[in-house]
Image (cartoon, rainbow, N blue to C red; front, side):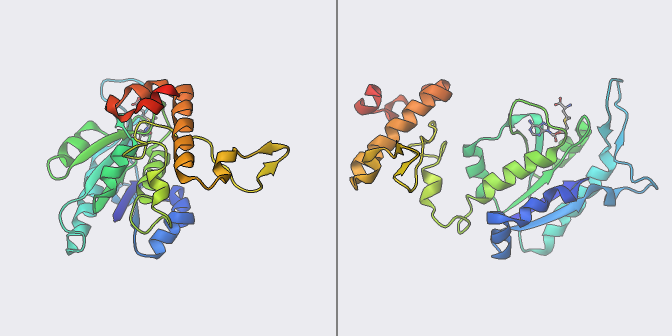
Length: 251
Ligand code: SAM
């Protein structure tokens, strides 16, 4: 997968050299390219913002540098390697919720471009214009307001990247995660344990030491149902009700 990120703070993305994502980049699974929006400004001060039309507080990101940046990034893909056009992802608190299901869909895309807003956001015409030549998704990582799109982009890039084939050693771990499509889609994962079997007088639940895989699976599902009921009860009302069997109902 190719990922282009346009930002006024390219240094913000140093963590993408670490851990799973760093390894995925080294392995050629992920091709991340950072672009400084200011390189598409033409004034002495490399201005990317201006006062809002209609008045009000704060500044708005100017359309000209964004237009040129998106032209250049999209054109850079026309070397035939990626083929087609990228999907433009615009982090914004006013976007559709970024969920695991959406991350799964994005992980199937060959090429994503992230446009990191700052200040009060990007001039509205930029997305309108871009939508004429590429798919555009405005996505929110939660109901709160960050100072910029960089941290939201890091969240989305990490979530999508770990779903790419070859990034995680054991693909099963993705399928058993909270929110994973399938049995876990509307559930939270319960507690997990490792050695030693007794720590500070606290024992690991005995079923996990039993070697009985059926019993372990049942216990994990019970724990997931309990944790979901405790932390996010609204999730139990989502999805197809037939996903619950009679054992689930007893929990
Ligand atoms: N005035 C905007 C509003 O109320 O919708 C908030 C702008 S915010 C201060 C600056 C930038 O941070 C946004 O353009 C967006 O890129 C990013 N951002 C803030 N909160 C976000 C969230 N919850 N999800 C994704 N991006 C967010």
